[in-house]
Image (cartoon, rainbow, N blue to C red; front, side):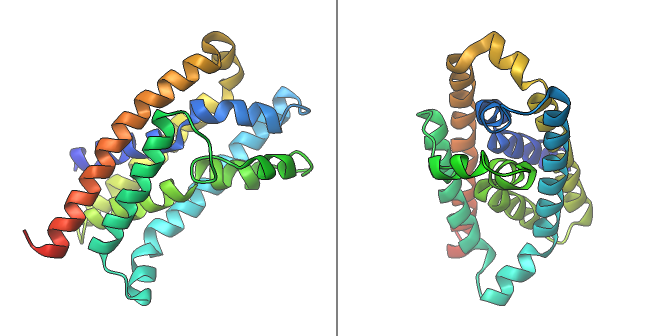
Length: 208
């Protein structure tokens, strides 16, 4: 159970990539006070956590209703995470990992950016949603394993929240280059986890 929890925590925290999201957060909240920025970050984290929790609980049933097997989703999810990891390694930005330029421009004209784009897709993006479902499905019928995944998700969200709250100070110390270096390291770790998901899905699908 400890192994499941640690894998879930590392996977989700790497995908959240709070350091990589700090510059975007500062951009879309540039006209807000420090207190208002903190309120936005906390609200966004709660919304993202609730969204991921619901998806983690009912996601497997949703796949079954669509006729999608878990091995197929593991392979597809692994490929998605691998693409995300490649973006992180090369410090590229797209709608897969972050917001697009158009979305950022739209967000700057919104009165509340907590839901979009901060909660979705910056925190609970496609990679995070696929990961929580993959991690919960790996626990199978073991309820303690599923509980460990949920607990790890909450811990990763809490750490993500902490990083975003002090994001301005971190960005001032390490700069954009330092953030990109750390993001690249996270990307390498995520690529290995993504390949493991693909291998596990292939083994279950082809019984080898």
